[in-house]
Length: 334
Image (cartoon, rainbow, N blue to C red; front, side, top):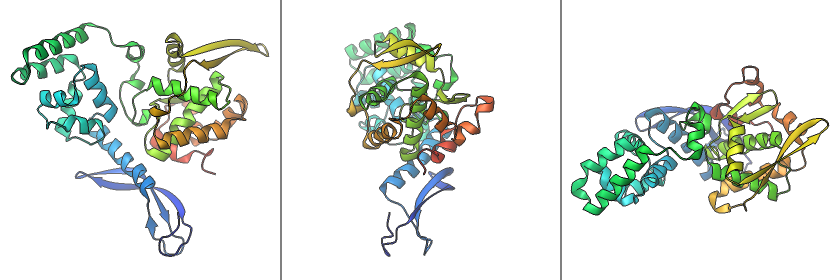
């Protein structure tokens, strides 16, 4: 970025800074361009988005306010419209839709929404709202909720119900819910760009994709939690993630032998759906594919071993923090 007054090309700086938000303060990795001559600092829309997304994520995490995708998932689970959900919860007629779109509710409303993740709690809200509902609406909602109370959760939730890594949205997940659709489409994208999808290589590609997206957007792309192990960063429970994709016939897993070792390669069965991704995410995918297209598994493992995210954590197989390490990706900060 050039200095708007002098035309001088400025340097991007990243440093820890504390920003105020709603009578609170949050420490983030602040991004700005700095003039070497005047020491003035400037931001653009892209940097403002990274900075404010970090603040919003930390605010939601601190006060237990659900993230937009959680808010949408809650409503869709009960098969009600955003307008009807607003009525049931006693909100403004368009409030719930705004919260799904990213507007941050107050702490009290956020916690109310979080509470109805449990079908038992939503049943209480339905019963409080009988005067607002037609009899057929009331009976339909009640029947649906009673069914949800009794039935098992869907497949991927059941897989991870005993794994704390995927129970909450926080720094360890890059402030996103685990998203199987995006994982599958990311694999499809890489395959379309000519990358060989061997399992060990895929684990590193997913790591770089999520962490580069966090660096540029303030959240991960797929909501995966990563752990540092001897062969580099890997998704927590990656075997279960890939097995679930295979069981749903989203990918095929091909096994064969190389030099007395058995390896696995993934073959996506879906066409890449660009509508699931925003412009920043699509650019991240393109940059990852360009960076690693001609690197084999050994080369990408060696690249990952130069990352502070791996160096600082592999001895104890620690979970890797997005906030601490996403802005220091050696492979993309040259």
